[in-house]
Image (tube, rainbow, N blue to C red; front, side, top):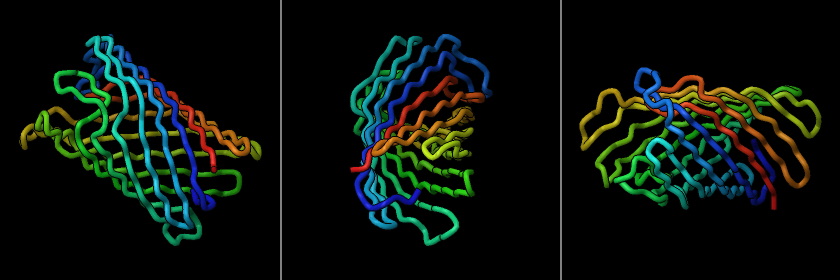
Length: 243
Protein backbone atom coordinates (compact mmCIF):
# COMPACT_ATOMS: atom_id res chain seq x y z
CA UNK A 1 0.00 0.00 0.00
CA UNK A 2 1.21 3.53 -0.72
CA UNK A 3 2.26 5.11 2.55
CA UNK A 4 3.31 8.58 3.65
CA UNK A 5 6.97 9.51 3.38
CA UNK A 6 9.13 8.27 6.22
CA UNK A 7 10.88 5.35 7.91
CA UNK A 8 8.85 2.37 9.13
CA UNK A 9 9.96 -0.29 11.61
CA UNK A 10 8.30 -3.71 11.32
CA UNK A 11 8.65 -6.94 13.26
CA UNK A 12 7.33 -10.37 12.25
CA UNK A 13 7.21 -12.81 15.16
CA UNK A 14 6.40 -16.26 13.80
CA UNK A 15 6.09 -19.88 14.85
CA UNK A 16 5.80 -22.87 12.51
CA UNK A 17 5.03 -26.44 13.62
CA UNK A 18 5.11 -29.47 11.29
CA UNK A 19 4.78 -33.04 12.52
CA UNK A 20 4.74 -34.46 8.98
CA UNK A 21 7.16 -34.46 6.06
CA UNK A 22 5.91 -35.53 2.63
CA UNK A 23 7.33 -37.19 -0.49
CA UNK A 24 7.06 -36.06 -4.14
CA UNK A 25 3.52 -37.48 -4.38
CA UNK A 26 2.31 -35.65 -1.26
CA UNK A 27 2.20 -38.80 0.86
CA UNK A 28 3.54 -38.76 4.41
CA UNK A 29 7.18 -39.85 4.47
CA UNK A 30 7.83 -39.00 8.14
CA UNK A 31 4.88 -38.84 10.53
CA UNK A 32 7.05 -37.90 13.52
CA UNK A 33 9.23 -35.25 11.88
CA UNK A 34 8.65 -32.74 14.70
CA UNK A 35 9.89 -29.67 12.84
CA UNK A 36 9.67 -26.33 14.65
CA UNK A 37 10.83 -22.91 13.51
CA UNK A 38 10.74 -19.83 15.74
CA UNK A 39 11.68 -16.57 14.08
CA UNK A 40 11.85 -12.84 14.67
CA UNK A 41 12.12 -10.97 11.38
CA UNK A 42 13.14 -7.31 11.69
CA UNK A 43 12.34 -5.05 8.74
CA UNK A 44 13.11 -1.41 8.00
CA UNK A 45 11.11 0.22 5.21
CA UNK A 46 11.65 3.70 3.76
CA UNK A 47 8.96 5.41 1.67
CA UNK A 48 9.70 8.52 -0.42
CA UNK A 49 6.75 9.29 -2.69
CA UNK A 50 6.67 6.24 -5.02
CA UNK A 51 10.09 4.87 -4.02
CA UNK A 52 10.30 2.02 -1.49
CA UNK A 53 13.50 0.67 0.09
CA UNK A 54 13.59 -2.31 2.45
CA UNK A 55 16.06 -4.26 4.59
CA UNK A 56 15.20 -7.48 6.46
CA UNK A 57 17.20 -9.42 9.03
CA UNK A 58 15.83 -12.66 10.56
CA UNK A 59 16.87 -14.20 13.86
CA UNK A 60 15.55 -17.60 14.82
CA UNK A 61 15.84 -21.29 15.62
CA UNK A 62 14.97 -24.29 13.42
CA UNK A 63 14.73 -27.72 15.05
CA UNK A 64 13.84 -31.23 13.90
CA UNK A 65 12.87 -33.78 16.51
CA UNK A 66 13.30 -36.59 13.96
CA UNK A 67 16.98 -35.75 13.37
CA UNK A 68 17.48 -34.24 16.85
CA UNK A 69 19.19 -31.25 15.23
CA UNK A 70 18.86 -27.50 15.82
CA UNK A 71 20.21 -24.56 13.84
CA UNK A 72 19.85 -21.03 15.16
CA UNK A 73 21.21 -17.51 15.05
CA UNK A 74 21.05 -14.76 12.44
CA UNK A 75 19.42 -15.85 9.19
CA UNK A 76 19.84 -14.79 5.57
CA UNK A 77 19.60 -10.99 5.22
CA UNK A 78 17.50 -9.45 2.43
CA UNK A 79 17.68 -6.06 0.69
CA UNK A 80 15.01 -4.74 -1.67
CA UNK A 81 13.92 -1.73 -3.71
CA UNK A 82 10.78 -0.89 -5.67
CA UNK A 83 8.74 1.86 -7.28
CA UNK A 84 4.96 2.24 -7.45
CA UNK A 85 3.57 2.22 -10.98
CA UNK A 86 1.53 5.26 -12.13
CA UNK A 87 -1.80 3.41 -11.77
CA UNK A 88 -4.64 5.34 -10.15
CA UNK A 89 -7.23 2.63 -9.53
CA UNK A 90 -4.92 0.38 -7.47
CA UNK A 91 -1.55 0.31 -5.73
CA UNK A 92 0.84 -1.71 -7.93
CA UNK A 93 4.39 -2.10 -6.62
CA UNK A 94 7.11 -4.09 -8.43
CA UNK A 95 10.16 -4.74 -6.25
CA UNK A 96 13.46 -6.57 -6.54
CA UNK A 97 14.92 -8.33 -3.50
CA UNK A 98 18.29 -10.01 -3.05
CA UNK A 99 18.86 -12.59 -0.31
CA UNK A 100 22.39 -12.95 1.02
CA UNK A 101 23.85 -16.15 2.61
CA UNK A 102 24.47 -14.64 6.04
CA UNK A 103 22.68 -17.33 8.07
CA UNK A 104 24.15 -20.28 9.97
CA UNK A 105 24.85 -23.24 7.68
CA UNK A 106 26.58 -26.60 8.10
CA UNK A 107 26.57 -28.95 5.09
CA UNK A 108 26.77 -31.95 7.42
CA UNK A 109 23.43 -31.07 9.05
CA UNK A 110 20.01 -32.18 7.80
CA UNK A 111 18.43 -28.98 9.18
CA UNK A 112 19.89 -25.51 8.61
CA UNK A 113 18.54 -22.04 9.43
CA UNK A 114 20.62 -20.47 6.65
CA UNK A 115 20.77 -21.64 3.02
CA UNK A 116 24.39 -20.80 2.00
CA UNK A 117 23.20 -19.46 -1.36
CA UNK A 118 21.94 -16.24 -2.94
CA UNK A 119 18.40 -15.57 -4.17
CA UNK A 120 17.26 -12.95 -6.68
CA UNK A 121 13.58 -12.25 -6.03
CA UNK A 122 11.41 -10.11 -8.31
CA UNK A 123 8.03 -9.46 -6.66
CA UNK A 124 4.83 -7.74 -7.79
CA UNK A 125 2.48 -6.45 -5.06
CA UNK A 126 -1.13 -5.35 -5.65
CA UNK A 127 -3.61 -3.58 -3.37
CA UNK A 128 -7.13 -2.54 -4.31
CA UNK A 129 -9.81 -1.11 -2.01
CA UNK A 130 -13.51 -1.11 -2.94
CA UNK A 131 -15.49 0.52 -0.15
CA UNK A 132 -15.02 -1.62 2.95
CA UNK A 133 -13.67 -4.50 0.85
CA UNK A 134 -9.99 -4.87 -0.09
CA UNK A 135 -7.78 -7.21 -2.13
CA UNK A 136 -4.10 -7.85 -1.43
CA UNK A 137 -2.06 -9.96 -3.82
CA UNK A 138 1.55 -10.86 -4.51
CA UNK A 139 3.33 -12.78 -7.27
CA UNK A 140 6.91 -13.76 -6.42
CA UNK A 141 9.60 -15.63 -8.32
CA UNK A 142 12.78 -16.69 -6.53
CA UNK A 143 15.82 -17.36 -8.72
CA UNK A 144 17.85 -19.55 -6.36
CA UNK A 145 21.60 -19.75 -6.88
CA UNK A 146 23.85 -22.77 -6.34
CA UNK A 147 25.05 -23.74 -2.88
CA UNK A 148 28.88 -23.76 -3.27
CA UNK A 149 29.35 -26.24 -0.41
CA UNK A 150 27.10 -28.94 -1.86
CA UNK A 151 27.05 -27.95 -5.57
CA UNK A 152 23.25 -28.21 -5.34
CA UNK A 153 20.98 -25.77 -7.14
CA UNK A 154 17.89 -25.87 -4.89
CA UNK A 155 15.32 -25.08 -7.60
CA UNK A 156 13.54 -21.81 -8.38
CA UNK A 157 10.28 -21.04 -6.53
CA UNK A 158 7.04 -19.41 -7.70
CA UNK A 159 4.69 -17.95 -5.07
CA UNK A 160 1.12 -16.68 -5.53
CA UNK A 161 -0.43 -15.12 -2.42
CA UNK A 162 -3.77 -13.45 -1.81
CA UNK A 163 -5.80 -11.88 0.99
CA UNK A 164 -9.40 -10.68 0.99
CA UNK A 165 -10.19 -8.10 3.67
CA UNK A 166 -13.35 -6.61 5.13
CA UNK A 167 -13.27 -3.42 7.20
CA UNK A 168 -15.40 -4.24 10.25
CA UNK A 169 -14.56 -1.01 12.09
CA UNK A 170 -12.22 1.94 11.52
CA UNK A 171 -9.42 0.07 13.30
CA UNK A 172 -10.21 -3.58 12.48
CA UNK A 173 -10.00 -5.54 9.24
CA UNK A 174 -10.08 -9.32 8.71
CA UNK A 175 -10.40 -11.89 5.95
CA UNK A 176 -9.28 -15.19 4.41
CA UNK A 177 -5.79 -15.76 2.97
CA UNK A 178 -4.15 -18.24 0.60
CA UNK A 179 -0.52 -19.04 -0.20
CA UNK A 180 0.62 -21.33 -3.06
CA UNK A 181 4.20 -22.28 -3.90
CA UNK A 182 5.72 -24.50 -6.58
CA UNK A 183 9.39 -25.11 -7.28
CA UNK A 184 11.45 -26.46 -10.14
CA UNK A 185 13.64 -29.54 -9.72
CA UNK A 186 16.95 -29.43 -7.92
CA UNK A 187 20.21 -29.82 -9.82
CA UNK A 188 23.26 -31.55 -8.41
CA UNK A 189 26.50 -30.33 -9.99
CA UNK A 190 24.48 -29.25 -13.04
CA UNK A 191 22.47 -32.50 -13.36
CA UNK A 192 18.70 -32.38 -12.81
CA UNK A 193 17.53 -34.56 -9.90
CA UNK A 194 14.15 -36.18 -10.62
CA UNK A 195 11.46 -36.24 -7.93
CA UNK A 196 12.72 -33.08 -6.19
CA UNK A 197 10.00 -30.59 -7.18
CA UNK A 198 8.26 -29.07 -4.18
CA UNK A 199 4.73 -27.72 -3.87
CA UNK A 200 2.55 -26.44 -1.05
CA UNK A 201 -0.87 -24.88 -0.62
CA UNK A 202 -1.75 -23.08 2.62
CA UNK A 203 -5.01 -21.43 3.66
CA UNK A 204 -5.99 -19.34 6.66
CA UNK A 205 -6.65 -15.69 7.43
CA UNK A 206 -5.50 -12.33 8.77
CA UNK A 207 -6.80 -9.99 11.46
CA UNK A 208 -5.54 -6.39 11.29
CA UNK A 209 -5.81 -3.98 14.22
CA UNK A 210 -4.65 -0.37 14.26
CA UNK A 211 -3.68 1.56 17.37
CA UNK A 212 -1.84 4.84 16.80
CA UNK A 213 1.10 4.88 16.27
CA UNK A 214 1.17 1.06 16.05
CA UNK A 215 -0.65 -1.44 13.86
CA UNK A 216 -0.79 -5.19 14.51
CA UNK A 217 -1.66 -8.09 12.19
CA UNK A 218 -2.20 -11.70 13.25
CA UNK A 219 -1.83 -14.37 10.54
CA UNK A 220 -2.65 -18.07 10.62
CA UNK A 221 -1.99 -20.48 7.74
CA UNK A 222 -2.43 -24.24 7.59
CA UNK A 223 -0.74 -26.41 4.97
CA UNK A 224 -3.49 -28.41 3.28
CA UNK A 225 -1.30 -29.76 0.49
CA UNK A 226 2.44 -30.43 0.51
CA UNK A 227 4.84 -32.30 -1.77
CA UNK A 228 8.50 -32.87 -0.84
CA UNK A 229 8.22 -30.51 2.11
CA UNK A 230 6.80 -30.20 5.60
CA UNK A 231 3.08 -30.02 6.39
CA UNK A 232 2.04 -27.98 9.41
CA UNK A 233 0.69 -24.75 10.92
CA UNK A 234 2.05 -21.20 10.72
CA UNK A 235 1.36 -18.39 13.22
CA UNK A 236 2.61 -14.82 12.85
CA UNK A 237 2.23 -11.52 14.68
CA UNK A 238 3.30 -8.48 12.65
CA UNK A 239 3.75 -5.01 14.13
CA UNK A 240 4.30 -1.75 12.22
CA UNK A 241 5.58 1.48 13.73
CA UNK A 242 6.24 4.75 11.88
CA UNK A 243 9.07 6.94 13.14
